[in-house]
Length: 238
Image (tube, rainbow, N blue to C red; front, side, top):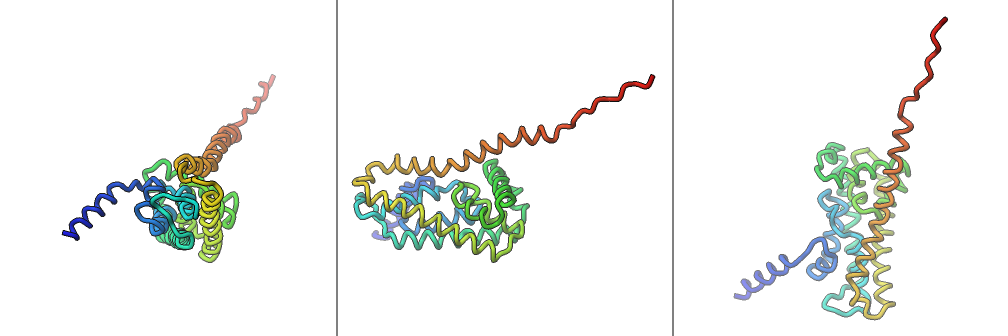
């Protein structure tokens, strides 16, 4: 009887979880959910829709001592889970790309995923390995696609590992501690959790939107540069 009740409760919790909502994930799985989500977002191509930025910020906010509510997390556990999930996920994505090659990305049907792959490759070409790997952490979709793309493009393993660790630490610690600082300094901020998370989502999508606008501006310029120049024909000989 007790086992059946536990199974029923677990089934109800599982059905109620919204994997795209940071608060729902944290309420259901706690710090473990942080590790799993970040591993999927950074290591598996299917994870590009998961809420990495808002999850880290919300988890940090729910660690603050002044935040009440049903969910309260441990800051050391959240930071450890976030670091393990994102570093292990990124290295797994790199290994998948090294094994599967560019055909792995070319076979994806998602337009959003294809655009992310194009931007990730542009990052690598424009900024070099170090800067591109670190910057990609802060751009949704790109941080999912860049890891397997780096493996497919034969980025040196040592260089990728070094810079993905550096970028992963800055990203996870920065967003988590920002949420923790807000929760510690603003009384009853958990009452406004939804609009706060909404602002974080908007801020995380801003680099993506700016990059899309830049790419649209570059396309007409590139087309003008490739248009053939008509040369005046010589007058007919008398």
